Image 1 (tube, helix red, strand yellow):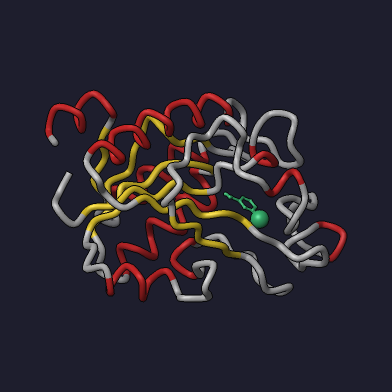
Image 2 (tube, protein in one colour):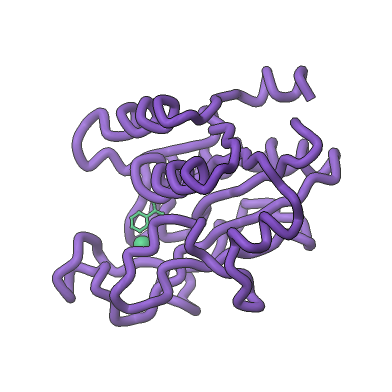
Length: 197
Ligand code: VGL
Ligand code: ZN
């Protein structure tokens, strides 16, 4: 990885995994794949960020209020926790998003740290210029995060073996990957990144 690269794990939360409120098929396998990247980035002492979908109980994002989704990742509930198998190091920086009741909050680039510092400001302050992005869901939060990061001038490498999508329509995730690549994202897998670092 580049010297100023960081890992961003997107929304690897209980509700997005099998058994959760808005499960991504094989989300638990994605968690296992993310763990291998967590190991690698930890070894290299690279910064690690983990975003979380962090909705209020009442959100326009939810079906019951006219939105698209069953209620999920409500602040403080079990479903909003990081997946128990996800091996986040103790110094992981948590980025919360989707906290405003009118906000879908798909993009981690609009998220804030636990101190309320905007993620994008923190990235600039830390002089990070490349994000390695994996997590859930390919066709929503991963997609929106990657597209906004690219727009904001960051380089992005999508970890294609550590993402999983909702696929409301078949092929949505594949199309999202194509769109991210078309917009300038690089792609890699653990085998090639491990060798290239
Ligand atoms: C997400 C749907 C609704 C995601 C969040 O994390 O991709 N998807 N809220
Ligand atoms: Zn959500």
